[in-house]
Length: 338
Ligand SMILES: [Zn+2]
Image (tube, rainbow, N blue to C red; front, side, top):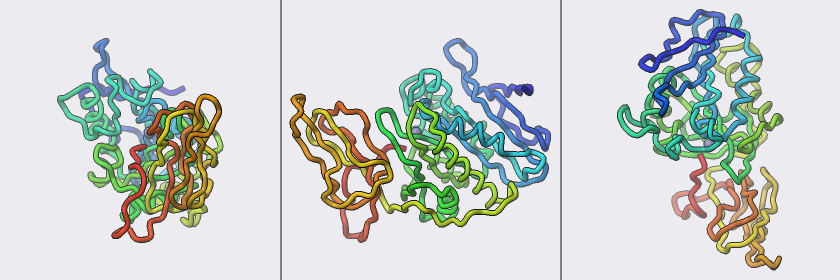
Protein backbone atom coordinates (compact mmCIF):
# COMPACT_ATOMS: atom_id res chain seq x y z
CA UNK A 1 0.00 0.00 0.00
CA UNK A 2 1.55 3.27 -1.08
CA UNK A 3 0.66 6.85 -0.27
CA UNK A 4 -2.07 8.55 -2.25
CA UNK A 5 -1.23 11.95 -3.66
CA UNK A 6 -4.05 14.49 -3.43
CA UNK A 7 -4.28 16.90 -6.36
CA UNK A 8 -6.47 19.84 -5.37
CA UNK A 9 -9.41 21.16 -7.33
CA UNK A 10 -7.56 24.09 -8.83
CA UNK A 11 -4.59 21.99 -9.93
CA UNK A 12 -3.91 19.82 -12.94
CA UNK A 13 -2.18 16.47 -12.93
CA UNK A 14 1.47 17.60 -13.14
CA UNK A 15 3.46 14.64 -14.39
CA UNK A 16 6.78 16.50 -14.20
CA UNK A 17 6.84 16.53 -10.39
CA UNK A 18 6.38 12.77 -10.05
CA UNK A 19 9.45 10.65 -9.44
CA UNK A 20 10.68 8.45 -12.28
CA UNK A 21 10.67 4.66 -12.01
CA UNK A 22 7.73 4.61 -9.57
CA UNK A 23 4.00 3.88 -9.46
CA UNK A 24 2.03 6.89 -8.15
CA UNK A 25 -1.56 6.80 -6.94
CA UNK A 26 -3.41 10.10 -7.09
CA UNK A 27 -6.83 11.48 -6.25
CA UNK A 28 -7.57 14.30 -8.65
CA UNK A 29 -10.20 16.72 -7.41
CA UNK A 30 -12.46 17.61 -10.31
CA UNK A 31 -15.48 19.60 -9.09
CA UNK A 32 -17.45 20.01 -5.89
CA UNK A 33 -20.39 17.73 -5.13
CA UNK A 34 -23.42 18.59 -2.97
CA UNK A 35 -21.50 17.99 0.24
CA UNK A 36 -19.22 20.78 -0.87
CA UNK A 37 -16.33 18.35 -1.20
CA UNK A 38 -14.71 17.41 -4.48
CA UNK A 39 -15.46 14.46 -6.69
CA UNK A 40 -12.14 12.63 -6.72
CA UNK A 41 -11.05 10.77 -9.86
CA UNK A 42 -8.49 8.05 -9.05
CA UNK A 43 -5.42 7.96 -11.29
CA UNK A 44 -2.55 5.51 -11.35
CA UNK A 45 0.53 7.07 -12.90
CA UNK A 46 3.35 4.71 -13.81
CA UNK A 47 6.31 6.90 -14.59
CA UNK A 48 9.10 5.19 -16.46
CA UNK A 49 12.80 5.76 -16.09
CA UNK A 50 13.32 7.35 -19.47
CA UNK A 51 11.41 9.79 -21.63
CA UNK A 52 8.70 8.59 -23.97
CA UNK A 53 5.01 9.07 -24.72
CA UNK A 54 2.31 9.72 -22.15
CA UNK A 55 -0.15 6.93 -22.79
CA UNK A 56 -3.62 7.23 -21.26
CA UNK A 57 -6.20 4.54 -20.58
CA UNK A 58 -9.62 5.65 -19.34
CA UNK A 59 -12.43 3.39 -18.11
CA UNK A 60 -15.99 3.80 -16.83
CA UNK A 61 -16.79 7.10 -18.54
CA UNK A 62 -20.15 5.34 -18.37
CA UNK A 63 -20.42 4.44 -14.70
CA UNK A 64 -21.77 0.89 -15.14
CA UNK A 65 -19.20 -0.21 -17.76
CA UNK A 66 -16.74 -2.02 -15.54
CA UNK A 67 -14.58 -4.45 -17.56
CA UNK A 68 -12.05 -1.65 -18.12
CA UNK A 69 -11.44 -1.35 -14.38
CA UNK A 70 -10.16 -4.92 -14.14
CA UNK A 71 -8.18 -4.43 -17.36
CA UNK A 72 -6.38 -1.48 -15.77
CA UNK A 73 -5.71 -3.36 -12.53
CA UNK A 74 -4.16 -6.24 -14.49
CA UNK A 75 -2.13 -3.80 -16.58
CA UNK A 76 -0.57 -2.26 -13.46
CA UNK A 77 0.73 -5.72 -12.47
CA UNK A 78 2.29 -6.22 -15.91
CA UNK A 79 4.36 -3.03 -15.94
CA UNK A 80 7.76 -2.66 -14.28
CA UNK A 81 8.27 1.11 -13.88
CA UNK A 82 12.04 0.55 -13.77
CA UNK A 83 11.87 -0.75 -17.35
CA UNK A 84 9.14 1.54 -18.70
CA UNK A 85 9.87 4.24 -21.28
CA UNK A 86 7.45 7.14 -21.01
CA UNK A 87 4.47 7.38 -18.69
CA UNK A 88 1.22 5.46 -18.29
CA UNK A 89 -1.76 7.34 -16.85
CA UNK A 90 -4.56 4.93 -15.95
CA UNK A 91 -8.01 6.16 -14.94
CA UNK A 92 -10.08 3.17 -13.75
CA UNK A 93 -13.18 5.21 -12.86
CA UNK A 94 -13.71 8.33 -14.98
CA UNK A 95 -17.38 8.99 -14.17
CA UNK A 96 -17.27 8.81 -10.35
CA UNK A 97 -20.91 9.83 -9.68
CA UNK A 98 -22.20 7.33 -12.27
CA UNK A 99 -20.05 4.57 -10.81
CA UNK A 100 -21.38 5.27 -7.30
CA UNK A 101 -24.95 5.02 -8.62
CA UNK A 102 -24.15 2.01 -10.82
CA UNK A 103 -25.48 3.90 -13.84
CA UNK A 104 -24.29 5.04 -17.23
CA UNK A 105 -25.00 8.71 -16.68
CA UNK A 106 -23.55 11.47 -14.53
CA UNK A 107 -25.42 12.57 -11.38
CA UNK A 108 -27.60 14.96 -13.42
CA UNK A 109 -28.57 12.09 -15.77
CA UNK A 110 -26.47 13.44 -18.61
CA UNK A 111 -24.24 11.20 -20.73
CA UNK A 112 -20.67 12.49 -20.32
CA UNK A 113 -19.75 10.92 -23.66
CA UNK A 114 -22.15 13.25 -25.48
CA UNK A 115 -21.13 16.60 -23.99
CA UNK A 116 -17.36 16.77 -24.36
CA UNK A 117 -15.63 19.23 -24.01
CA UNK A 118 -18.08 20.45 -21.37
CA UNK A 119 -17.86 24.01 -20.07
CA UNK A 120 -15.73 25.76 -17.49
CA UNK A 121 -18.90 27.34 -16.09
CA UNK A 122 -22.00 25.33 -16.89
CA UNK A 123 -24.10 22.48 -15.56
CA UNK A 124 -22.58 19.98 -13.14
CA UNK A 125 -21.84 17.43 -15.86
CA UNK A 126 -20.38 20.11 -18.15
CA UNK A 127 -18.03 21.35 -15.41
CA UNK A 128 -16.96 17.80 -14.59
CA UNK A 129 -16.33 16.98 -18.27
CA UNK A 130 -14.35 20.20 -18.79
CA UNK A 131 -12.12 19.60 -15.78
CA UNK A 132 -11.66 15.92 -16.62
CA UNK A 133 -10.29 16.92 -20.03
CA UNK A 134 -8.20 19.86 -18.89
CA UNK A 135 -6.74 18.43 -15.68
CA UNK A 136 -6.11 14.92 -16.99
CA UNK A 137 -6.81 13.95 -20.61
CA UNK A 138 -4.93 16.81 -22.29
CA UNK A 139 -1.70 15.43 -20.78
CA UNK A 140 -1.93 12.32 -22.97
CA UNK A 141 -0.21 11.64 -26.30
CA UNK A 142 -2.42 8.59 -26.98
CA UNK A 143 -5.64 7.35 -25.45
CA UNK A 144 -7.59 4.11 -25.28
CA UNK A 145 -11.08 4.73 -23.91
CA UNK A 146 -12.54 1.49 -22.51
CA UNK A 147 -16.30 0.90 -22.63
CA UNK A 148 -18.82 -1.98 -22.73
CA UNK A 149 -22.32 -2.48 -24.07
CA UNK A 150 -25.02 -0.50 -22.28
CA UNK A 151 -27.66 -1.88 -19.92
CA UNK A 152 -29.80 -4.64 -21.45
CA UNK A 153 -27.33 -5.35 -24.26
CA UNK A 154 -24.18 -7.39 -24.77
CA UNK A 155 -21.14 -6.75 -26.96
CA UNK A 156 -18.30 -8.61 -28.53
CA UNK A 157 -14.79 -7.22 -28.00
CA UNK A 158 -14.73 -4.57 -30.69
CA UNK A 159 -13.08 -1.31 -31.64
CA UNK A 160 -14.67 1.93 -32.82
CA UNK A 161 -12.10 4.00 -34.67
CA UNK A 162 -11.62 6.25 -37.65
CA UNK A 163 -9.75 3.85 -39.91
CA UNK A 164 -9.12 6.60 -42.48
CA UNK A 165 -6.72 8.22 -40.00
CA UNK A 166 -3.41 6.38 -40.00
CA UNK A 167 -2.67 6.80 -36.29
CA UNK A 168 -6.07 5.68 -35.06
CA UNK A 169 -6.12 2.83 -37.60
CA UNK A 170 -2.77 1.67 -36.20
CA UNK A 171 -4.12 1.82 -32.65
CA UNK A 172 -7.17 -0.19 -33.71
CA UNK A 173 -5.24 -2.95 -35.46
CA UNK A 174 -2.76 -3.26 -32.57
CA UNK A 175 -5.61 -4.46 -30.34
CA UNK A 176 -6.29 -7.61 -32.41
CA UNK A 177 -9.97 -7.56 -31.40
CA UNK A 178 -12.85 -9.73 -32.62
CA UNK A 179 -14.25 -6.88 -34.73
CA UNK A 180 -13.16 -3.39 -35.85
CA UNK A 181 -15.74 -0.88 -37.06
CA UNK A 182 -15.12 2.30 -38.99
CA UNK A 183 -16.62 5.13 -36.94
CA UNK A 184 -16.00 8.74 -37.74
CA UNK A 185 -15.53 10.87 -34.65
CA UNK A 186 -18.94 11.79 -33.26
CA UNK A 187 -19.23 15.24 -31.71
CA UNK A 188 -19.44 15.20 -27.94
CA UNK A 189 -17.51 11.99 -27.37
CA UNK A 190 -14.22 11.77 -25.52
CA UNK A 191 -12.75 10.11 -28.61
CA UNK A 192 -13.75 13.01 -30.86
CA UNK A 193 -12.42 15.69 -28.51
CA UNK A 194 -9.12 13.91 -28.04
CA UNK A 195 -8.60 13.28 -31.76
CA UNK A 196 -9.42 16.92 -32.54
CA UNK A 197 -6.84 17.95 -29.97
CA UNK A 198 -4.01 15.89 -31.42
CA UNK A 199 -4.35 12.86 -29.13
CA UNK A 200 -4.94 9.75 -31.30
CA UNK A 201 -7.78 7.90 -29.57
CA UNK A 202 -9.92 4.84 -30.14
CA UNK A 203 -12.82 3.35 -28.21
CA UNK A 204 -12.47 -0.23 -27.03
CA UNK A 205 -15.81 -1.95 -26.33
CA UNK A 206 -15.26 -4.87 -23.97
CA UNK A 207 -18.28 -7.11 -23.65
CA UNK A 208 -21.09 -6.46 -21.22
CA UNK A 209 -21.96 -3.89 -18.52
CA UNK A 210 -21.96 -4.56 -14.78
CA UNK A 211 -19.51 -7.46 -14.90
CA UNK A 212 -15.93 -8.61 -15.02
CA UNK A 213 -15.50 -10.95 -18.04
CA UNK A 214 -11.98 -12.19 -17.59
CA UNK A 215 -11.46 -13.75 -20.99
CA UNK A 216 -12.32 -10.49 -22.76
CA UNK A 217 -10.38 -8.51 -20.14
CA UNK A 218 -7.28 -10.63 -20.77
CA UNK A 219 -7.64 -10.18 -24.54
CA UNK A 220 -7.94 -6.42 -24.04
CA UNK A 221 -4.89 -6.42 -21.78
CA UNK A 222 -2.89 -8.26 -24.46
CA UNK A 223 -3.94 -5.61 -27.00
CA UNK A 224 -2.79 -2.80 -24.71
CA UNK A 225 0.57 -4.49 -24.07
CA UNK A 226 0.96 -4.97 -27.82
CA UNK A 227 0.34 -1.24 -28.27
CA UNK A 228 2.93 -0.32 -25.64
CA UNK A 229 5.45 -2.58 -27.39
CA UNK A 230 4.68 -0.87 -30.70
CA UNK A 231 5.49 2.55 -29.19
CA UNK A 232 8.61 1.01 -27.57
CA UNK A 233 7.40 1.88 -24.08
CA UNK A 234 7.94 -1.74 -23.03
CA UNK A 235 10.16 -4.41 -24.54
CA UNK A 236 8.92 -7.33 -26.57
CA UNK A 237 7.88 -8.30 -30.02
CA UNK A 238 4.84 -6.61 -31.55
CA UNK A 239 2.34 -9.10 -32.84
CA UNK A 240 1.41 -8.74 -36.47
CA UNK A 241 -1.27 -6.14 -36.83
CA UNK A 242 -3.31 -8.50 -38.98
CA UNK A 243 -6.44 -8.98 -37.01
CA UNK A 244 -8.14 -12.35 -36.82
CA UNK A 245 -11.32 -10.35 -36.53
CA UNK A 246 -13.51 -8.67 -39.06
CA UNK A 247 -13.07 -5.12 -40.26
CA UNK A 248 -16.38 -3.40 -41.04
CA UNK A 249 -16.90 -0.22 -43.07
CA UNK A 250 -20.05 0.59 -41.18
CA UNK A 251 -22.46 -0.67 -38.56
CA UNK A 252 -26.08 -0.02 -37.68
CA UNK A 253 -28.85 -1.28 -35.43
CA UNK A 254 -31.79 -3.36 -36.59
CA UNK A 255 -34.94 -2.41 -34.65
CA UNK A 256 -38.12 -4.34 -33.92
CA UNK A 257 -41.26 -3.05 -35.62
CA UNK A 258 -43.64 -4.76 -33.21
CA UNK A 259 -43.75 -4.94 -29.45
CA UNK A 260 -43.78 -8.16 -27.44
CA UNK A 261 -41.29 -10.70 -26.19
CA UNK A 262 -38.13 -10.90 -28.26
CA UNK A 263 -35.65 -13.72 -28.66
CA UNK A 264 -32.48 -12.72 -30.53
CA UNK A 265 -30.96 -15.79 -32.16
CA UNK A 266 -27.34 -15.28 -33.30
CA UNK A 267 -24.39 -15.29 -30.93
CA UNK A 268 -21.96 -12.42 -30.65
CA UNK A 269 -19.41 -12.27 -33.48
CA UNK A 270 -21.53 -14.69 -35.58
CA UNK A 271 -21.71 -13.98 -39.27
CA UNK A 272 -25.25 -13.72 -40.59
CA UNK A 273 -26.51 -13.95 -44.17
CA UNK A 274 -28.84 -11.57 -45.95
CA UNK A 275 -32.40 -12.66 -45.25
CA UNK A 276 -31.47 -14.81 -42.23
CA UNK A 277 -33.94 -14.67 -39.33
CA UNK A 278 -32.15 -12.98 -36.44
CA UNK A 279 -35.01 -12.62 -33.96
CA UNK A 280 -38.57 -13.62 -33.23
CA UNK A 281 -41.00 -11.26 -31.53
CA UNK A 282 -43.75 -13.21 -29.75
CA UNK A 283 -47.08 -12.01 -28.46
CA UNK A 284 -47.94 -12.75 -24.83
CA UNK A 285 -49.57 -16.05 -25.90
CA UNK A 286 -46.35 -17.41 -27.40
CA UNK A 287 -47.28 -16.85 -31.04
CA UNK A 288 -44.75 -15.33 -33.43
CA UNK A 289 -45.81 -11.77 -34.38
CA UNK A 290 -42.67 -10.72 -36.22
CA UNK A 291 -39.69 -12.44 -37.80
CA UNK A 292 -36.84 -9.98 -37.92
CA UNK A 293 -34.37 -10.69 -40.72
CA UNK A 294 -30.91 -9.36 -41.51
CA UNK A 295 -31.33 -7.00 -44.45
CA UNK A 296 -27.77 -7.75 -45.55
CA UNK A 297 -24.85 -10.00 -44.70
CA UNK A 298 -22.76 -8.93 -41.72
CA UNK A 299 -21.28 -9.74 -38.35
CA UNK A 300 -23.01 -9.49 -34.97
CA UNK A 301 -21.25 -6.76 -32.99
CA UNK A 302 -23.79 -6.53 -30.18
CA UNK A 303 -27.35 -7.49 -29.38
CA UNK A 304 -30.28 -6.99 -27.10
CA UNK A 305 -30.65 -9.52 -24.27
CA UNK A 306 -33.73 -8.07 -22.56
CA UNK A 307 -36.75 -10.08 -23.72
CA UNK A 308 -39.50 -7.53 -23.06
CA UNK A 309 -39.45 -5.31 -26.10
CA UNK A 310 -41.49 -2.33 -27.18
CA UNK A 311 -41.93 -1.54 -30.85
CA UNK A 312 -38.73 0.17 -31.93
CA UNK A 313 -36.35 -1.66 -29.61
CA UNK A 314 -32.75 -2.04 -30.70
CA UNK A 315 -32.39 -5.75 -31.50
CA UNK A 316 -29.04 -6.36 -33.14
CA UNK A 317 -25.95 -4.28 -33.96
CA UNK A 318 -24.77 -5.43 -37.38
CA UNK A 319 -21.33 -4.71 -38.82
CA UNK A 320 -21.28 -4.60 -42.62
CA UNK A 321 -19.09 -3.81 -45.57
CA UNK A 322 -20.55 -1.25 -47.90
CA UNK A 323 -19.65 -1.94 -51.47
CA UNK A 324 -20.69 1.37 -53.02
CA UNK A 325 -20.61 4.00 -50.29
CA UNK A 326 -21.23 6.86 -52.74
CA UNK A 327 -24.35 5.46 -54.34
CA UNK A 328 -25.84 3.33 -51.61
CA UNK A 329 -28.10 4.57 -48.85
CA UNK A 330 -26.79 3.96 -45.36
CA UNK A 331 -29.01 1.14 -44.11
CA UNK A 332 -30.75 0.62 -40.80
CA UNK A 333 -30.82 2.87 -37.78
CA UNK A 334 -27.84 4.94 -36.82
CA UNK A 335 -25.61 3.53 -34.12
CA UNK A 336 -25.27 5.79 -31.07
CA UNK A 337 -23.87 3.16 -28.75
CA UNK A 338 -20.49 4.74 -27.99
ZN1 LIG B 1 -19.85 3.32 -22.85
